[in-house]
Length: 464
Image 1 (cartoon, rainbow, N blue to C red):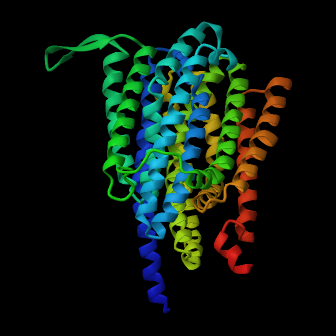
Image 2: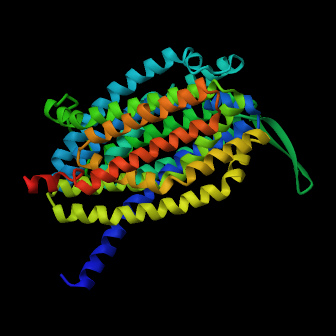
Image 3: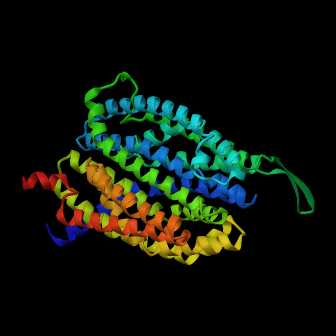
């Protein structure tokens, strides 16, 4: 193959990568925008309102990380079936996804609503806002079944190469959330426009209004995702029996279980991490909540590329195409690092302005800006870890990421944060330094995995 042909193929591959990645990035922008808008609109009500909304957010990560792990198992096996051009198998696997949505969605609805009154207590939320935080959590998790459907069915669609539909769902979820926030959070207002008094309706529900708005938006997203999956030409479960298929479920669970334990363990670590930060005080809680919200937007390029990496790696594995698998890694890594350098630089420069969008408290702005600038420097290295992990998830290699993430979370972040905040009396800056140390460990572990080639099952089989 001559140089020009190789270049043409490289550009074609880059086009495929970006074609899959950009809708996922935009979808995540919309998901993050829901958090931004809730935090910003509630932030106008004061620091207590911000803390009430953000104090239990890590519990949500714990719940949805477990659900996302189930989606990862289906992503790997459906991407593999699509790579082998076996549509019948893809549809049958999708029917098993429907079955698991019904089971897990119902189970998590009962669990989250039953524990909503205790979660703020366990999270060491200030007693003055525990009741408000509990009510917000309860309302937000009422539509747990459609939210589960949106998460898992979105993954099924992306595994089939359809990243645009989940993106469109995210856009409409965000629009619904914004409109309802505007109507439900604030009371009736009147302002002058071109000499005329204009009255804006409003329910004046505050934090509760934000919860209702998000719940309605998420419910619509889940219902719409279900309808789209049912009509999809490749992975529609229509006509399939909703009976457990032990072979399919076992294959999915072999991939899902380590990823579920990883996500559950790391998310439980986030809960412990946030709980220790909540114990520092209201200012630290508000700054941490806002910084997390701001930071999440700047990881969007990384995680959008990770989804594309997982899908294309699964396709290559299903087709048993070792050359394509190798070229995918060489294409993804430089694109990912370049994107994360740009996003990290933007985060570093704009940190004070972005934190200021959510709070007018000078202490919160200074503290939130400081920790965001710290983490911005580490983003490119973390981006490398995201890509290698995504390719491993796409081919079903979930045990190593499980070990890597649990070691980093509990062996570095939680232990170090405990000593820094609970024993040495240090604050939020020290806690985020421990988080960055965790990310650096992941970079080293995934770099070793990449250099040794243990991420690639096709290489391992060839060597055997």
